[in-house]
Structures are given as structure tokens and as C-alpha cells.
Image (cartoon, rainbow over all chains, first blue to last red; front, side, top):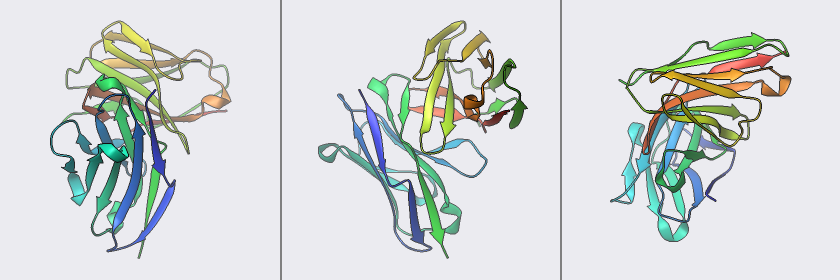
Length: 113
Length: 110
């Protein structure tokens, strides 16, 4: 069975500091991996995805993530946090590369002024 | 731009009522999904559909049913609403490597 673990249900960083949101997955085959963001009172929006090819993936709003097969990780980073990054972030894995996605429990990112 | 719309942003119903949540997408996607979102639990798949009149149970189908009579529309039905179904419901459509989400319906069952 596949699963996704997000470390930390709440993360706080100062404005301008590095953002690091951690995600580990378990999968029996090379998965598709995703990060979604949910701003208050909105649906989920795709930030970035890894399917094949380059393991460092760049997304919207300056975010990027690196697929590390040996560590079964797909951590999300941004060099400099902005107040507008405050949101809930979900890591997700595609189940056997079919159309069903398993989501992590989410990490709420707080930006401190 | 892909658009997924949901019929209501907020809904209040009473225990025992039959509840319909509607979702419409405009991108001709074959796959559509219904998720439930609860604090600390993330998103959990209720049902999905990969074609008109085709459906498959997700991880938490109990107490729910679905209907897909047209490709663009996917409905979630609560046959007899209960208080433990108070939650945020998210509809999505898309493919293996991308799903597009609607804004969600926050359902409160009293």
C-alpha cells in the first residue's frame, strides 16, 4: 500500500527565511509525486509535480522540490518566504500511476513578520 | 483555464435529509473525483468516476453514493445525512498526473 507522510502539521518561518516542508512516501513502484497548496477558503491548486526525468522540479511562486529515491522523499522548499505563502500544503502520491492520488495530512505554513 | 465548479460554497442540512452536492467541469475530462477534507486527516477519496455511468469506491464510501449521467457532471449524494458527515467536500477532475479542484462545499449537518 502506498502512503504519504508529512512531517509537521504546522510550520512557522519568518518572512524572508527558507521554507522547508517535508514529505516522505512509500511506494512499490516509482510514483508520480505532487505538492498542492490550499489558500484559505479555496480549493487545492497544483504547485508542482514529478513524473519522470529531472529530479529537481520547479513550480509556481518560487517553490521547488527534489525527488530523492534513495530517501523516498519529496521535500518542498522556497529560498525566501513571503507573507502570501501562508497556506496549507499537501504532498501527494499517485497510486500505481493510475488516476487515484493519495494525499498527506497537510502542513499549515505560518509566516511570521 | 480549466474550471471545476461546485453548486454551493456553504450548505446547512438537518440529520436525515437527503443531500446532493453537484460538480461540473468544462475540460471534457473522463475522470472525476469526490474527496472529503477534515482537519488533521487531509483529503480522503470518497468515490471516483472514470466515465459516464461508471464509478468506483474510494477509501471512505460508506454513507455516500454518486451519479454521473453526463461527462461534465458528477454528483455526490448523502442518502440520509448524519452529523459525522459535517465536513469540507472537494470535487476534482483530471488525469494521472494532474487533478483540478473546485472551491469546495462546506457542509454542516445539524
